[in-house]
Structure formats: structure tokens, C-alpha cells
Length: 207
Image (cartoon, rainbow, N blue to C red):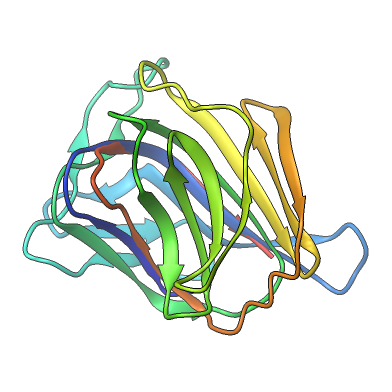
């Protein structure tokens, strides 16, 4: 997984995005990517990874996302995607089992607004029909949460993807599971957002 974001229309705000990867040790996860809004440079379009892995995200289109000051409940900034925005990661995230967390506010619920993706067969995490949705990119839908996200306030969202299925949480509460052979075949390398505006304050990605 290497691409972080592409936004083709409306808007989304992101305060945090994080990815954790499952290790071979039971119940153990490793933080492999953490993007916090306070570490985004709106002048250069570089979002510095604070996981310690130096997997920085850099804008890959003509217009980089903006940094909106004081838009979250605690007054923190958020990264604001409002149009043809795309961020690419310095290094792809290998195929595996993931936990992905984000703190976001979509301007509209319809979507699709993709947070993570890559080539055909990679893991794609998106908002679609106002809900979290997991895909084996361009091949199959592998799970959708139960409850629609708020467009008037920030949402804490996360998904867990393993070889046998997916699960979702919304604002700390379990919000759906799906047993499926995820069969991911490609690395993740970008985040893209279609037809939305979002503000990210923080993002985590764990193995």
C-alpha cells in the first residue's frame, strides 16, 4: 500500500491517520505509519510520518491539501482535502493484516472517499454511502460497517483486516464484521479521496 490520498471533488478533514501491522507475536501490533495534522506542511505538501519509519506522504498532483487551523473540537488543525489532491507514501506498506485508524469529518456522506489504496488487489479503505467500506481494490468488496458517519462532527473510525475477514469500530464502539477471504495481493501505497472534503487530524496504520 503506497498511495495515501486522491480527492476529485468535494471535501474531507483529517486530524489523524494511523496504520498498525500485525506481528507474528500473538496480540502484538507494530505502528508502521502515523500522520498527524500538526506534522503536515501545507507549503511543501509534505506530511511527515511520526511513527519513526520516515514513510512521509507527499502530494502527487498540482494542488496539495490545505491545513485548516482550529477546526477540531479541541482546537487542533486538520488536513483538508478539497479537490484533485493525492498523497503518495515514500515506501509501500507490505501485504498483511492491518488495523487502520482515522479521525475524520466528511463534508458529505455519499462518497466514495478513499483513505488508502494501491494497485488492483491491494487493500482499499474508503467511505462509501456514508459508511466505512473495505475493498480488495478493483476486485471485491470485503466488508462494510453498520452505522453512517456524522458529517457535522469528527468521527473516530477504525477497521481491522485479516486473512479471514474485516471488522469496524465507530467512535469506540463495535460497528460490524464480515467473514471473507480478503486475499490481498498488492501493497498499499497511496491514499485517495474521491468526491469529498475531509479534515484529518491524525492517522495511524499498524501491522
